[in-house]
Image 1 (cartoon, rainbow, N blue to C red):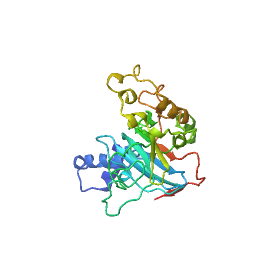
Image 2 (image 1 turned 120 degrees about the vertical axis):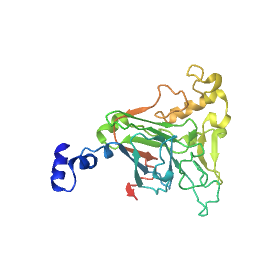
Image 3 (image 1 turned 90 degrees about the vertical axis):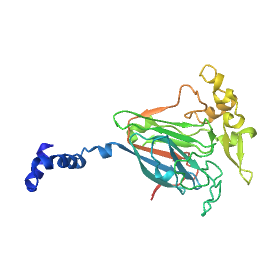
Image 4 (image 1 turned 30 degrees about the vertical axis):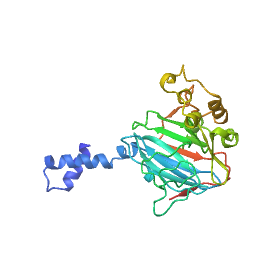
Length: 278
């Protein structure tokens, strides 16, 4: 670093070396090829393989920034990328069946995952049921990031999560669903839209609000809170996801990477080819 400073000092003779040194060190740190600005960020790609538009949304854990303004529109076959700080933790989900009021006066705008009727959730958590992708990133990219897909509050779309690197994909991916949960959803868990279509499936906890299903109070341990007929249905359809709070072994993935792809409807319902979206 002193070499860089000496060169710049000889080019600028109006400063004493003691005055110039602190500024020089700061400039060198910013412009060195191995500077920490890139190393301390991750890139997330959200892809829509559904044959219909979705409105992905993000919500940070407390103390972390909102990503991508908290929500955006994504047409079939499109992908949106955005940056996440290296230590970001939070959730990502997709809203469906949205019709936003331009005046912002509508309380609910989406059939699933709605956040106070807003396109940009700005940190607001969506209304369940919705399939949740949960991330915990680490600044040190030599250490693994942690991520999972949760159906603890219910399901609205299948999703696949993996590093963008093909070399890491095989051991670090979270697969989609082998079955159609909405088609198999029992009547007591169904969320139905105005046209009578099943648009989401509640978890037993969300539907019945019982301690035994929600793993709380006297059922707040893995020994006391066991899988139910409902969580087993979720697990059979989507084996890579959390089906209830104490799912075991926990389907939590850890992988050291700095680019991740989150694909909604990975089973290629629409058969569309991805194109980058602004």
